[in-house]
Amino acid sequence: MTMQPSLTTQRTLTHLSLTLVAGVVACAIAYQVMGGQRIDRNGILREPFVFIPLGYVCLVGGLLSGSGAALLALRQQLKR
Image (cartoon, rainbow, N blue to C red; front, top):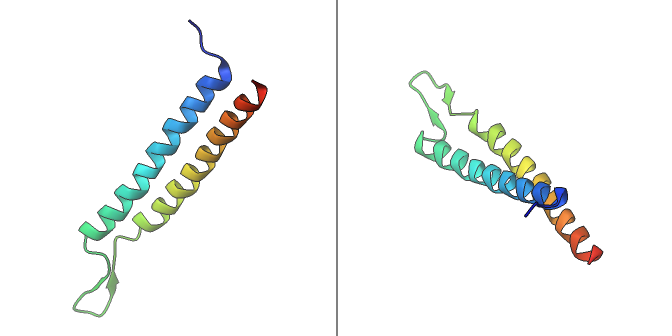
């Protein structure tokens, strides 16, 4: 049994979306575990800043790929 290209693409986009949303959760947890914001003895703010933009990139990617998968599913339903 061979799958249609749109079904394979839809499944791939769904997996990508779920993986990226898991990345958002992982970034949020890592940010909290590493201590969030703190000020050292010299008055300098220290924070694991890389997790903030990385989380946003994963969020936007997850939303876009999820939207693409939803649009493919809707198109598939309308064809039937």
